[in-house]
View 1: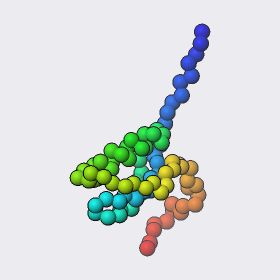
View 2: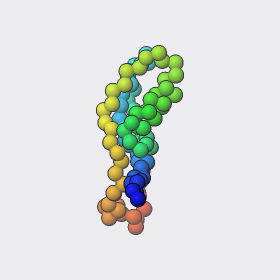
View 3: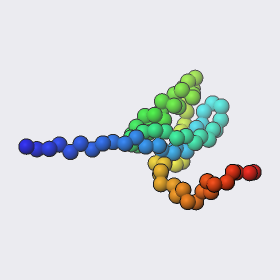
View 4: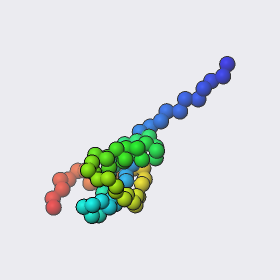
Length: 86
């Protein structure tokens, strides 16, 4: 009897920094996109761009950074016992 290995895919948060050139000029964006992998990040980003620029026939997009957000922050580095006073 052969067992199938079922690998569970986990949704992660991806940090995406990019610029957009449209008829309105240049815009700089920094987004967090939830996705399983890079392919899904690309699909979600395309969807967001279509919603943000619905009247544009053509836009030029340059990805500056694409990385998964790490959830291993060291809580000891943060002072959680005192209030923040600017």
